[in-house]
Image (spheres, rainbow, N blue to C red):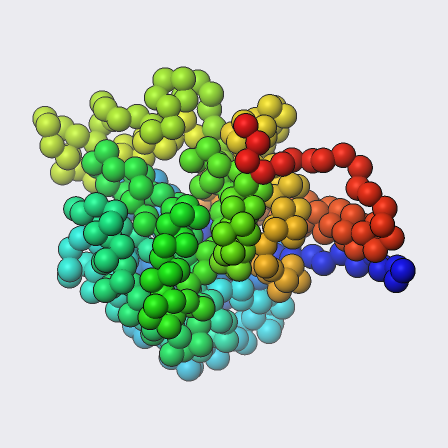
Length: 413
């Protein structure tokens, strides 16, 4: 019997630059777009993040969604009002060498199936700029949403995905890129009572979408950037989701992670249930959607009345919360990923995403130690999961020694 040695495999750590949108003042970065990236790389080095997920977004002057209507302001750290050039890429690469901070991937989070054809075309053109920037910056992945046309039902959106989104994946394939889909249902994207405003919100839809992609030869370009906060929002847990994907033969779909939590408020569930607040939110005035963008943000009460985002490491939970899928069991999340998914941990990225409302500070000095502490927590919890996996599966497994106990089990009710 060959005895395997203890060799824990740690995941790569990164940080989404939307964690601090206003690190560089707007007037400075509008005049010199790449200074925002340079200063974010310096900030990441100072707080101990080895990589960044570089956030791109339509400039506020060109976005179809007013900032006042957004629950979480979007960061256009990577300014692509003008196409990204080789000279700009060389400047960013020099800053990466100087700081020692790497680039995990690019992120552009928008509704790529928007109902308005003009808005959809602008988003597509911008996404292609993101793709081109990714190539010049030497990364192989872009992270974003699929979205949904809220004017039509889900089956019709499947057809729209085939006609509108698959060509984007073909463009990604031509550039050697993978598109990693984040799966937030985005309930507050519309003032209607529609809750699932991102077609790719759960494993069932992921598989349906991937089958469409396979028919068009772009199956390898469609992957999931898994975020456990969105699973908690829908009453799911990571281990059961990962088990389901494995059972269905789709354990390969998850190709990266956002580490962001969600804490379900039992009082809010008692009042509204998991559908959230359905009436008297403040986004409708006199029987129709309010024309005031500041009122439209109230559509997010479909989510915020019963849930609050968690920055990993900032919350203490009642153990019952884990069993009820009302918060993220971080240790089991990282262990289950190793046990059930088709990933190479050492090549897999954990991207810290910060949307904890009470700590959404735009003050560098105040936010820096908060992010540093959360990064340290994520690093430690992944190291613990890596140690557990290697000890239990490699060392004990190679010697025929049973693991004690059972741990969390999928599908348990």
